[in-house]
Length: 466
Ligand code: 6PG
Image (tube, rainbow, N blue to C red; front, side, top):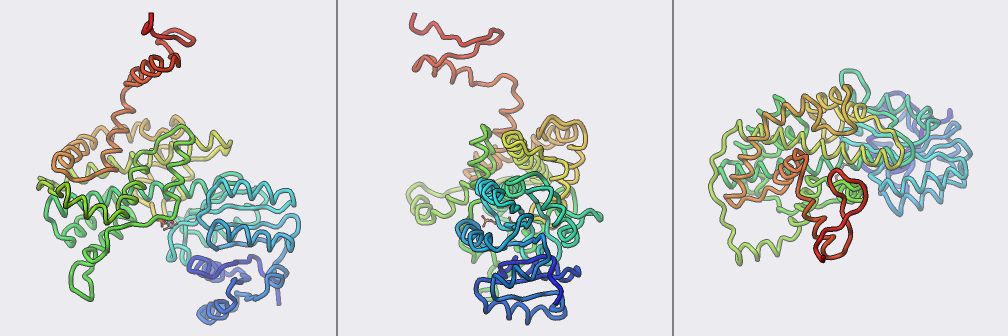
């Protein structure tokens, strides 16, 4: 039997879909799984693609069935399972081989694993894969971090299986070690913010405007035909159309209002703060999911504090403009974190290219990303999307609607944490002289910390105690 060009370890939803995608594109793919029973099931369901799949039950056979230098993609839960598998497989590998972690891993761990494996001349790639099962099967967006050697080994397979935007494969080598996983983490942070904004708009229409889920779905469907077009808008429109087969109620009405999270949104926020940034929209979205999980407390608080909300005058134009403003600000915050990390870790990230590979296949794909990639192609101060002339113009046109909507929501007692955060960030950033002078005075007053004085070098103190 000829040897396989790539190995896929882990035949869960994502691993199976990626292996089938590779086999369909004509690659010879070795496959294996911790639970051996899944392997024959997977092969039985592969149909005509079976001819390009090489199943193995033993790790040794899986490794020796690959052409060298080897490329092995792991699609397993991130964290401890990945460490266990690295320990198991590393002794079977040779210098020049590449292991890929295609899960949503913490990029700090990816950096540590890369450094440890580099000592054996084994290359470790942290690859973000976006698009869910459908994307993995028919075209994901992939964010690759690792060595040039690994990229040269992987490039052809990944380009073949990636989603395409006007023919351009949505995959690229973004930088060394943790760069790919970090870009995927921030992708997810933006995903969290966009999802939260959509949920907030839904809430305003449903509870402030008394719109039915179907009517809200139709509005999202209309938006999906214009400049707000995006995958998340499209699927929200779809979910709002459905009725529950059991009760006949709108499907969304029978879903419990608590949202889980696996960690990437939180990592984006933690890393932003660590880098001296604040992605307050992403933080608001992560926090809103946490609050959503406090169901019992919310039920008790509604009784104790009252859950009244005022009816709102809502017009489609205001909502659409507010959504546009807030979406730009969400992406802008994401790119700011990327820029800060790129500088800190010396990754030299190409923001325009990142926007390009997010244009198809991934969860945050949207019409706006095309404009973002073009904005980065022009001379734009590092990562500062809000300063791109075209976005400054759209923000000037749409922020008044955001202001109007947030003001109405707040006055009416409707929670809009992500939209309010966006507006606060925007209003903070557009003041060249803010209010931190007061913080500095307080610090100096209580702790003699000193402050910088306008127009003079050095540390200064106030006359507080003279
Ligand atoms: C993607 C998604 C995917 C997954 C998230 C969801 O890009 O395909 O982001 O990776 O849906 O991890 O994460 P939460 O469970 O934290 O919402």
